[in-house]
Length: 165
Image: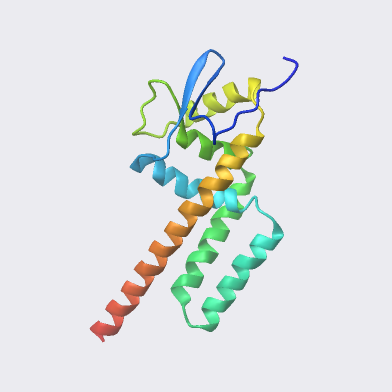
């Protein structure tokens, strides 16, 4: 192949690759959401040192404000992310496999073998840039929602403890 095909996910919600048809979906199942939470951590720690500094600064601020649970969540996520850096598979592409599905694929499950198969198929014909851009746009929206939910739970637990005392 002389040239890789470049997709534009802003213009198309389906594409063909390797004689197979794939569709981009805006939502995912519960099983895939659980996998997305893990992949977001992996993706975040393939980020820059500046991003790591920002997270450490958040932990520092939480600790100074006696928000120990919020600080602990960030530290836990950072530790998990660092451990997963040894994983040689690209988390951005794995995130894409959650939202891009082959025709007839079961959308209610996450199948790691199927994800690897899709990535291998795409790698033979397609430019990686649009996939990386897709992952970058997906992660902030989900991360923000997760952060708000975590903070809300933390606050509820704190209020519950205060009321029981």
